[in-house]
Length: 427
Image 1: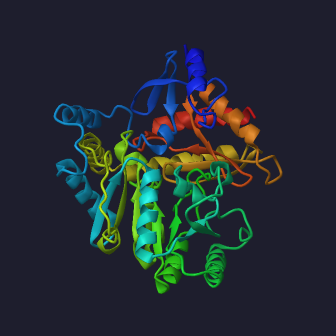
Image 2: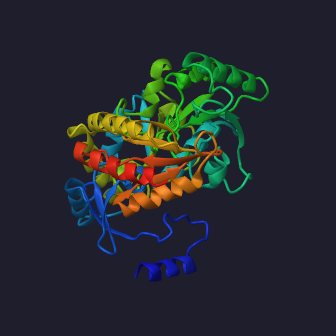
């Protein structure tokens, strides 16, 4: 049945639509931190549909909210007042730490970043954007234009002038040998030098932890130091929290808070986990920025009643059950467990991450050369053992991405680590 579905997939969908596994997997249902495939095989899910199933599969509170809302009305567009949208916007604005915040809902992280770019360029009257090397911001024309990851950038054409800055990857590149303080100083000096060669850009967009790039991050405080330079020149800071938001990093509710010394970002984008699988994205910005557009706009599907009901139920569950704290505690245990395994596996260059956002970088033993075949082997072996993980990486890197639902238990973390250990030792 799966092979027939795969043949039908290949016949009608684009060749560039990526699939995992030599024998692609059809997931039919899930519960908690587990999913099942069409053959009835059960898997521990350590990827959550690309960090999207944030709390749990088939979370009763979310499914109940969706069913009840769907029984009343599913959609009416932003042309009409929408109580669930207003209620979720109020909660997001309050949680954002952005003063006088306004919230606009979209259907995806790509669309959220696209909207942030529209706001920043319109507000600043500049189409120049600073972005980070190794970054990923989505699939739209403008988002691809600011993505600093060749593997996810199919064209160099863009409506924007993009200038790439150092700093998103701590352990590779020209500053990797420096200590944290000197690393930040070197990146700030690079930023200042770059700004001396161009007209003032509209904004810097950055992921606090680079997701697709392999869960890389700079030392804490880098973006605070950047913000001081940007603020002097009126340049905005956009924090792409599509993967880092809602407490996944454990230490902070938003990834930018590790860089909060100079205040919050001007714009925050979010998506993925807030809907727990429902299509929700959004932008938070100061009213001055959000209200700068001088033409009408709407969103047909952004902020629909049924997705907002899901978001409200999901956010309430996350806060009431302190899933941020759980991500910190269980994620910390999982990282240490994987580091102990990595010390015995020559292919593992580094285990890095925060909370339940963990990257395992693989290289050819004794070198810094990427080992994509090894990553594919581990992916397949982990599946055979009953564990689903993700892959990522940027320039000449290969990384396993681990991001389970944030309700992961200690027992499940131990189970997943044991499966992953066996898979790593199979290389």
